[in-house]
Amino acid sequence: MAILKVARLGHPVLRQDASPVPLDEIRSPEIQRLVDDLIETMHEYDGAGLAANQVHVLKQVAVIEAAQQNPRYPDAPDVPLMVLINPQVTPLTKDLEEGWEGCLSVPDLRGMVPRYTAVRLQCYGRDGEKIDVIAKDFFARVIQHETDHLLGIVYVDRMQDLSTLTHIAEWNKHWLGVKVQAD
Ligand SMILES: [Zn+2]
Image (cartoon, rainbow, N blue to C red; front, side):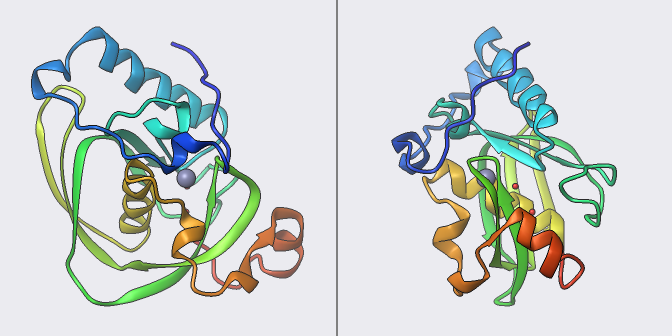
């Protein structure tokens, strides 16, 4: 396993579409290593999720996990470790809710991002098993953030009010606790 270099905003790889993983390749050593490295890199940087684009790999693979002891998201509810391969996300509501997001590719910043409060996630797990779940609130937010990466979309593209784009030091001073929410 390895901690991979994370691409930052401005790197073209963050603006490219990732390709689906052929189903018979999910269990290949290459994809399994990518999954392991994504998990290790996410843990190293205290991310709530990480998509393959962010480590310069254009494959539809992402990992998410938010534990309450995550120092970057102390108020976030637990999201169990999940591997998303070839994810399809369908909104289950028209309701959008604003919440704070950060991104390992946009270091030291936070911004308010509107997201659907409930989505259906269909994807494959690391063993090639089919996953079909309904996710709400913070779980739904993290899924939308990571699957956006696989489409070349970064959270700042979704922001409706750029005046909330905030340096983390100022966020801690002026915004913490105002309305906390996701990577
Ligand atoms: Zn991100």
